[in-house]
Structures are given as structure tokens and as C-alpha cells.
Length: 202
Length: 328
Image: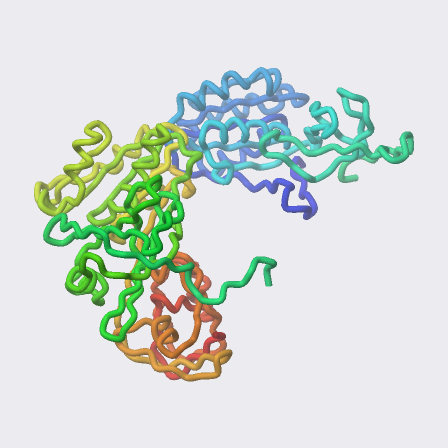
């Protein structure tokens, strides 16, 4: 089961939906890992839309689990990338060539959706018009508010900043511009007094 | 209660102006220019804003919203263009017949319910008839900042195409005019097709045109956020009805040719308003009790609100029935 229901939180925290087919000139679908299941569910609602779809899929640890099933949807274009970073030049190129009427569907982890949403926003699509569906890992992309370094795939709270080594508290305070949650030093007043890390949402 | 200072009176702040120019453009449309009576510069406005013009018509106060069409960078003058509506409620006829050069009038500070989305990469303007007015200010603004825009302007005939010649002369590559009497029409589907990502479309014109643009854009997969429209409704006449205003503790009669808002104002109730055309939401009023049918005409409340019978926009909506009690 790749679905996870996030508890209610502050307004800053992104809320994800369920992908629905929308009329459009083209469909750009970007997914990682179990996000593929959201695309397969989308196809169950409308297979015809995949004739105009460009799927960018980053399997991560899922390997070949979803690749054949996605390919069987016969999208107009299908790209499998080793990492989100490796797919960025392609995403930018697709967006720079796109016209109004392009629909964007994002599925998978928060880090992937946030970053891809940022690319689409920078290309001129309002964030409210971009569909998202969370699947798979609840790991977060965190920014250290002290050194501004980004730590990917954070699974525990607190965690150690991969750049400056501070012990950071995982906040729900989110930045669309950075596509990251805010991590704040947890032991600033009493250095060394760090609570035992707990896995997120456990 | 918010921490902001509370205004003493409803509506936007007012400015006393002198009519400094009256320029007839064609059979139906006349431009009125105002300067400030106190000689101060006008407040700056953002393109797309409107002002509410107060008219003292034989003891009756008329308050009509008009888009500001002058260059937003010019604080010495405000200009509006008024299309005469012979079948209307009389505001535009008053402007055409009674307003003379040098007259002192009262207008409100500008209010913008139709702003440019300056995040847009490109702005496509669709005007129908007198709907050209807000785009005059938007074009001036975008020209100054080097923004990308194009105008598609549908009007009845060459003779009634206000500003069509002037715009075509100044921006021959950006302005496209379509004349109904020559069977020309905006090819909307083709126009929406192939616009770069980040394009915003703005429509100002008759209700049918606005709906056509929203519907066509939705079919083409345009996000709602990229489609902007403005339509001021004029209150429609209807059967007179009685309203109890429980906060003010009075019962008032709404006449056939006045709106509920106007009736409240006539009876001395200081009801909030801004646009007086069903668009801004400022006059939204809670219904305490109602026995009868609402005639909702606004663009503000959603369908659920309309169906609930709990809210009414007194600037344009009416009521037919036996009892109506409002929380005002």
C-alpha cells in the first residue's frame, strides 16, 4: 500500500490530492518510485490521454517493478531517469517548449513533487493548477535555516544537517520556492541536549 | 474586528473633482476627464481599477462604477468612457445629458477588481464594445514596463469602435479589431491554441462573451487562474418588496426601479459597498429570515450560497415573497 494519510497540520504544509484526468493539449507526468501507482490509477480512469502524455519516471528503489506497466500505457514519450536531478534538464526543455493547455501531474515523494512543481511554476503554471498525489515514502527534503544547505530524504526528527552538522528539528513549515521544509537547530540553547531521533509519522 | 482603523462611512474614500474635458467619441460613447478640485495629484491606481461616480439626479443619488482608462502613471487626470444606454437605469444618460464642462462631481478612490497578473509572461486582452476601457490603462502600463501583450477587440461597426483607430495606429502589430457588421469575429479557439506557458487572458465585455471565453479556455485546458474577467452588472428592475433590517430596526420598501442597496441608502442605512455591480463582495449580507424566492444576480456568491437562502448581495439581487429579514 503506497498511500499515506498525512495528519492535519499548519497551513504552510502542502496538501496533496488524487490525480484526475483533465482536458489539455498535452500531459506531462512526473513520478518517482511508488508514484507510478498513481499514474496507473490515472490510466484506469482514461487511457486515451496517454496518447498525448510524456512520462518522466524515476524508479529509485522500485527498480523494474512499474516500468513495464507504465510502458504498456503507450505514452507518447517515456523517459526513465536514474535520479530527479538527472531528469531536470529534460523537464526544463519540455516546459520551455510547452504551450498553454499543458496539464502537469506529479506523483510520488514530497521532494520530487515539490521540486517538479517549482519547475512548472517557474515556467508560468500557477501552483494551484498543478495536480499532485503523494505515494510511497514520507521522507522529506529539508533546508537547514542556518547554513541553507538541503538534506534530501530525511526520515527522522531530529536529524543532522548534511552540510553544517547541526542537529535540526523537522518543521511542517514549507517553502514552495525552495521545495523544502524548514529544519531548525534543536539544541541551540543547550548544546548537546538532543532528543532521541524518531522516525517521521511513527 | 480587525486591528485596521474602521471607516466612518461605507464605500471607498471620496474625491471632489472638476470635469475638465468631455470628448464625444461616437454616437454612443463619450469620454469624461476629471481633475482634482483641490489641485493635489490623484492617488495612483493600478490598471484595471474602477471608480464609482456619484450623480445627483433630481434628488436621487446615482452611483455608477466606471473603469479608469487613463494612463495610470498620469496623476493629474482620471478619465472614464461612458457608453450611453438608452434602456438602462439612467446613470449613463445622466452623464451624457447633464454633465457639463467645469461641473463639480464626487468620485471614489480607485478600487481594482480586475488587476493584471504581473507574474504573467504574456497578456492577451479580449474586449467587447465598451469593455475596451480597462485595457486602455493596462496597455499603457504594459507598454511602460515592456510587457508582452496583444489586444483582440470586437465591436459592432467602424463607427462605434471607440479607440479602435487610435490603438491600431499606435500599436499596429498588437491590436486586432473585429467588426460585427463585416462578419468578423475573434477566432478564440485558434487564439488560445499555442500561446506560451504563463499567458494570461483577460476579457471585458458582455456576459455572453465572458462565458464564451471562460468555457473555451477550460476546454483547452487553461487553468482558471489564467483567465480573468470583469463584468459590472446594473441592478435590474423588479417587483417592489419589503425588507426588515433588524440591526437598524427599520422596515423599508424597495421600489421597482431601485436596488435593495439603494433603498437601504435612501432610508439612511450605512450599508457597505464598493463596486455596486455584484463583483466585489463588499455588500454581502446575512439573511435572518426569508419566506419567498431570492433573485440572485451577483458573480460573488457561489451556487451553494445562492441555494442556501442565507446570503444576499443587495447591490444587484432582489427578492420576491412575503417576508425578508436581513442582518443589517
